[in-house]
Image (tube, rainbow over all chains, first blue to last red; front, side, top):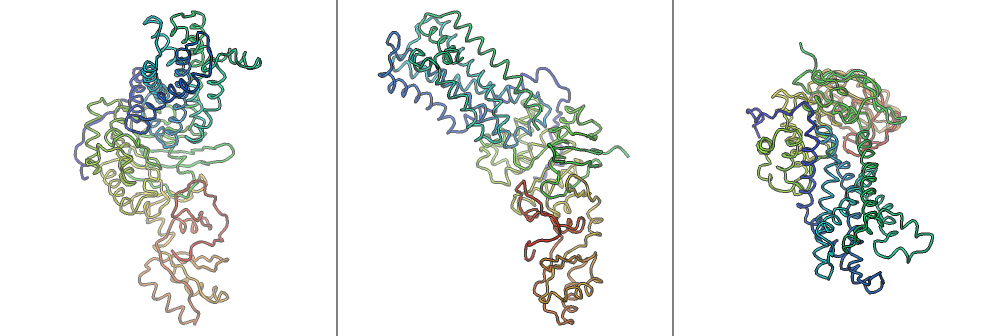
Length: 270
Length: 339
């Protein structure tokens, strides 16, 4: 305890901002966020159990009740569960950010000479990696109950990329809610207001044709429907280029709108 | 000889219609501690947030080691450390990982960050807990880790925003010792506190802040000359004889005695309480008036405020740390019976 007067390791914080910090700081924050998940047994278990539960519940509860084109509900279902799960996963961005703000961790980050974008980029990136993990878990569980990718390796990779990419885009929407919320609980409540209609008024679990006529156009325009349909085509080995491009457009569009807004809100907040 | 490490001139900040800072001036010479003393809502935290570049001021100027806070924010961030009111450490990370994280964000390199983390853990008596998640730490350990995290980059200037609020007395003393050593090693510190005792013990100079303004500044002994060393609180059975008693005791007081008209509580600042108390009792005894309450205590923030502004702070100000306390106006108070 008496060592402060002893010569200590000289640490010289770099005073000049460097462009490379944008990447290294974001990766440092990503490392920190993932470490939090790994170190928190509850979170780690939730991240693993939730996707397994979704796959099994939807497959066996709805599986017998819902008729789908072709009759193979599990193959129809899996892309829907993928997208629903990553969108739910993206709510973690709002909750995590609100928590860091509430605890004063963000204050510490902001008082350091780091890239100001890193807190948000690191948060959304680590949440995308968490989503990638849940998608892999779901794929494994799906394979055990008869799900198969019927497309090429490229189709399969593209399907997974669209799913995780869409979760990433929604993370930026989620980030805005996390930055504006007064607490983690408030963020959790608020983020589900857009997320529930987004996931369920879509083709994720039932064909849009089964919906009332007033809801059908809304569900068809819903980005979740577009991404789910694109993934379905890729999973079935019958990709539809226009739908895939539509999904990419939604992913890029949502990110380009909400990422800059989140950066602005983060910068202004004090 | 050189310019102050922290220089603040006419700093102003409003939140909507609420004026948090109404133009404050501060100058902290290098290697000294300035204690910013005030009740909740006085503007202490706002001042610290501006000085830590978390918040831009609406008006006025401030610089740290000659760097303008707004225009050279990154230069400022490289030389400051911040420990806020709540320990800003990650519950699920180990103590070591928390410190490494800060080192990496200071861009010192991964190896250096690790070495520096171990060094600080040893300094702060946390080596044994280094590999344990912070959620297993006690409150005092968390605050020490939080303070260590703000020291990773050897900051020349350190802000401590109510560093001991909510801590048990032993942890408080430990933290005080650490702070004293930091200053001895040349660090400049701005410390906010609600505890007069803390400012008194640590600070070279004290600025008393209220409603966004500095209402008094000076060394601890300068302030005490205005306030007295100790405070005697006295209440007598027969209210009608209070003025008489006040006149009787005035010659013994270090500063003008005060009377709370509602509760008839007399507050008398005195310089050397030990010998004085007997004299108090003797004089009152001679009048035949019955004493219903007599107590002696060190002046609290409350007494400072009473002396400087003629009103008390919020009842919680001397003990609790809840934000958003509404301050009662006027001298009336149904506060504590004895300190």
